[in-house]
Image (cartoon, rainbow, N blue to C red; front, side):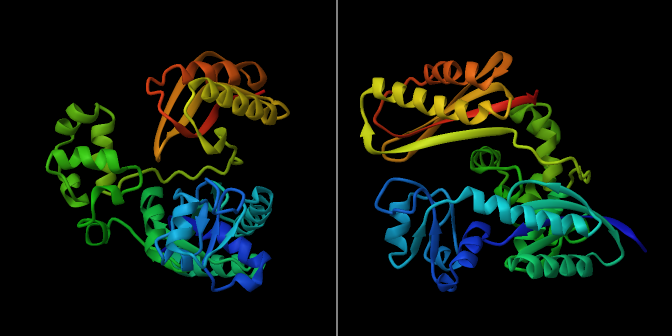
Length: 343
């Protein structure tokens, strides 16, 4: 019987894998990609190969920490253009399968397919990606996006896994709530305060009670997540970024807030310049501040009316920066422009 399935395709250690293809001599070695590739400077890990992850290296970690954990690792600079080019090849392969494809970023996409053997379809898809690009991918199969997304993790690396209502409780029931796509550490901590520590406990929780704590929409939604419920709609519209950001890490801490203001303004100008040619309309501007030693805060402002980047990003960043009350030493600043629509 032909059934409609949602598949989630996730390229394994994508950025690191692309770098290994470019530098075959690095195969089997711990590879860390981040910043300008100098672990002696401040910066964060963008991705790490499985060999580096075995030493505790992970995305978002300071490069210096990564070097301490994996001193023999090879550190490389981020090359955005190279990753975009390879990603385009992968997505072309996925579309050639005849499935409806919703691109979620460089290294992942949802597909909607009608087949009586989703595992065979997934394995063939992974084989075609490997033949065309020499990259491995994992494929999750589900009745909806939530199930498919989570299933991918169980299939890694380079495997296929099916997660549906039939095996949901067996696979997910005993796991902590933050194992669910959409629940982070803060929400999990709040749930724990209510005595809810596992997916199974959340699935049988009273939606009304959670609505009182998390809001009328979020409370019931959390229970639905724990029950494996979610959208199965896959949108084939071309993927476009919903925001663009730029940040800079200082090799010397900025203790003078005037310097911080100047740095934020400069990053905002650079971001606005990059966006000018693309004719984005910006609806919201967010500033990211990473204090010493490694505590990060973000503040944002929604503009009264969307405007062109050249006109609104820098003043918007200034307004967002004014919301920060702690003027402690700073090691990183960033600015993000969130888009309204393209004109």
